[in-house]
Length: 184
Ligand code: S3P
Image: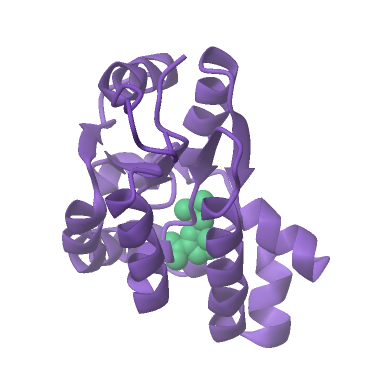
């Protein structure tokens, strides 16, 4: 059982954050907090419905609340964030504080955008991919990569890895317990 209190997974849609989080929870005795699911529970509707009823801006507010709540839990957790969570300034500052205090260890699941496009091709859950998903994913990769990189303690390229391999790579990098830090 590895030390840090919150493992936080960031990365684009289709990078495997939710599935890897579930696997890590099994292997490392952690609870999964998935910010997309938290948003859906608090709104009582799907992400697609939130986007169409209230707009992306409203979704981003709910997402910020969910991230803040997830990071403030005192349990051992693995947090799967939505792909756009790193773009909000408030979210970035919450993540940075959690890293600085030793409470969180952030991993970017980096994936080639063409691989992402193949992985999400059968899903209809993501409103941002309604138009030309491969082109959107390439643009988002270009627009967000620097943010993912600056906020991450580790980067795992998942493009050619199985879910099991990604989870093992995450587990093998988790920092150990701190002798004096109350958060680890
Ligand atoms: C989004 C990613 C989605 C979800 C929403 C917006 C994004 O989460 O939060 O559709 O902006 O990249 P996943 O990355 O879990 O698919």
